[in-house]
Structures are given as C-alpha cells and as structure tokens.
Image 1: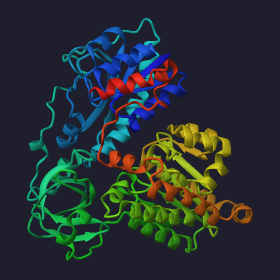
Image 2 (image 1 turned 45 degrees about the vertical axis):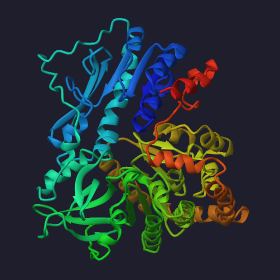
Image 3 (image 1 turned 180 degrees about the vertical axis):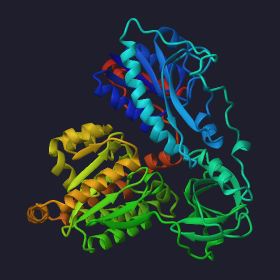
Image 4 (image 1 turned 135 degrees about the vertical axis):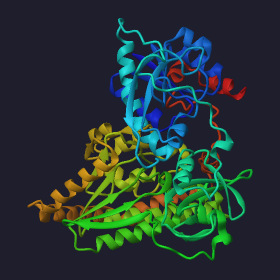
Length: 567
C-alpha cells in the first residue's frame, strides 16, 4: 500500500515504523507535522491508502481524518488518553502498560481501536526515554505492520472505544504540569527517582540544587549516607551525589532554569559550587569484567553522546582490556550504543570549534583502539540505537552483533560534517565503496535485518537488551573456545598488516580530519547552525526531501517550505 507517516519528528520510533513498513513491502513517505496546512497538502500529494501517526503531538486536522483513514499510535493501553501517558505510568508505578493503535476522530485518543499490545513495567522506575525507546517502540513496530495488514482487509472494522470492556483499562489523564514535576530533596529516594525519570529526557524534574533552580535528569540510586537533604556529598565522572530524605541519588545531568541554558553533565553545570566535593566510587559510566576467556568493556553514556573526557576514559579502558590475557574482547554499549561526539558539551564550550576538534580526535582514539587490537578477537555488542560516529566506532571489530530492534544511522550529512572515526576505512571494508557512498549520502536509517543483509553487521539477535547482552557474551565465549581460534586471530593480524601496507590508518585519519577541519572551523556545510538547532531543539521548518518522496515526485518541495514558513 501507499502509506504516509505523519510525525512531529523523525525520531527513533518513527524511523522504526518507516523501516518495518518498508520491509513489509509498502511504499512509505514521511511528512513532519509542521502545520495543519502542511499535513493536508502532504496527503493530497501522496494520495495514501493509509496515514499512520507513530509519533504525533499535534492534533490531526479534521479535513485529513475525514478524507483518509488515519491511525494514531498512542503510548498507552486501550482507554488511556492524554499527552502525558508515559509520565503518569512511571510516577504512579503502573505494573502494566501498553501501546494502542486507534483511528483519528474529533476527540483526541477516543477513536475506534485497530489493535493494541501490553507489556509488564519494570519493577525499578524506568527512564521515560528508556521506556519509549524500549517496550513502547517494540510494541509500536509490531502494531504499524498489523495496522497496515488490517487496512488491506476489506472485512476489517476497528472496535469502538468502550469503557465497559474488560480490555479497556485506561482512563483520561490530564497533561502533567510544572508543579507535578517539582520535588524536594527531602523526599524519599524512590519518589525522587520516579519523578525525575518520568521527565527524562524532557522536560526534567524541577528542584533547587546548590541554591540554583535546575531541571534534573539521569538519576541513579546512591548509597545510604546520612546528610542534609539537598547537599552535594561527592562527585564522579561528571555526576554529583546528592543527599535525599533517606539516602542519596547520583545526578548525571542538569539544566539551569534560565533562558538559553542547555542540558549538561551535572558537575559542569554546578562548576565551582561542587569543586571541593570529594571524589567517590559507586558511579561509573565504564566498567570492565572478564570470564571464560572473554573481557567485556561496557560503557553507557547518556543519550549516546561521548564528550572529549568520556572518550579519553573509554580509550584508556580499551587499552587496559587489550593488554589482559583474554582471547576475546567485547565492546558493549548501553541503552544507546553511541551517537558520536557530544554536541551539547561542544555548544557550551568557550570555543566550540576547538572543543569539537578535541572531541573528534578523542573519539578517533577510541576507534583506533578497536581497529588496532590484534592481541584478541573483538566483538561489538550493539544493543541500542547508534548514529554517525557511533556506528563507525562499532565497525572496527571482527564481529558486529546488533539487537533486532536497533536502528542505525551511519551518516554525518544532516549535521553538516564529513565525518571521521576511520569511517572511510571501516565502512567500505564492510559494505563496499558504492554502498558506503549511498549510506552516507542518502542519510537514511538502517534496520538491524538490513544491516546484516548489506554486511554492516554480522548477526542480529532478538530479545530485550539484557537477554541480548547475555547471548552476545555466550557467543564470545564460544568464539574464545573455538578450536580454530588461533587461525582466526592470525587472520585478523594478517588482514590488518595487508591493509596497513596498502594504506596506513594514519592516512585515513589525516584525510578525514582535513575535511573535518573545514567543516568545524570554516563551517563550509552548516555544522554550526545544525549543531545549535539540534542542541536547542529548534523545530524544523520543512520536511527533508530524502523522507518526503511524495513531495519530491510532485516537484512540490518549495510549496512545503512556503507553507511551513507561514506558521
């Protein structure tokens, strides 16, 4: 079928829907919901058999849902209504939640139901972003394919919403207000975790810290230490440890409540106010474990962004791991594998271009440790989404294993960068020069199955992230015990020696950095503006042509920009 996706942004969930529908054989185009006029015009150009809204904060225009079958993917179980569904589910500790596909009607979230999925909520309060990118995205990906199949069945009719039905357990919930997100450090740790995680990654919990009004993000339970509530007890790796009513919490990120402030590591935001706080163990973004001949370097950076300092620590951890007497090294990412350099830290620097230069050199050092490790076989474990240099970082290993639900964006173009991370070596080596050119120039997402099919990854495994990590570890242990291990390791060394003689890694690095210097210091491709718009969440003014195929084919891209500019 011809399907139009309407979405507020082409985020991870929207990308997953796009990938799943295309894989099911449908013709799919995307339109950003910039205004009612843009949405209606997009439908008139696309003439879709079906409109699906996987992530839409705006109301669907009446003219649209009356003329076309329009299905909303709502992040709540049947009967749940309102714009703050996940926020309330986390704050109120719901044991079960879901995702519902419902038809657009006059009253928001009240249309007839096309299908739904439910899932158990974690016992520990999840971060909203983790919930959204995890079980919600999984359920939504299944639902969009189901909806498309039902739309092709002439006998199918959606079920009217009926609160008397035992399957309809949700209810109308109001939008969360600022007051709902406020908390006091004197509250119990559990309450603080729930309130902050229900607002992570936006808009954050509201509190005062060091007598500053702040938005709080990225919190973890700390040790049960006695101390005045709200006092900073320690710091480590950019996070600060804060006393609560019955213990402590580690706070990873903050944003000042002031015009123009951006989200940054907590210790960076508080600066001299916490400079005297002691360093304390108990919080670490990077760990190393070993068993059965396998060493595992695990890293989990907030939203997958890697600052200069984080890259230096990770490179050091990889050097340490490569020097151990293990046979296989697993490089394992977290909730998000990696999205490359830390744009927020770069934007906040006194000299952003210099910080960007230092950051790209630091992440190159991480990639070099992976590519150059010839004392062990290397496996990258990509259990979360990855983008730009984060994808390229994973490609330097012998084996690249991805989780089936992962979305990869192996390109830099949308940020106005040529790219580095040795991508001109590792990407063509895996997919060929022509396909590497297409991936980086078309700037479209790649699903896990497609990644394996084109050689970007070696294997895709199903299951939740923890189960995926266990299966990757088992695979690495089998690799370490393989009777042909010595031959495999010798093969890795030989390939590197041959490649190095043909063209040294230093040459790839120098060529990439020559291009990046023009992007970062001369701003030849708009990196400065793209970075600022990304960091400050500036709304798009037009749908990118690479997504809006209906506009491209109709020669109507200019009309889209004109309609959006009159908002």
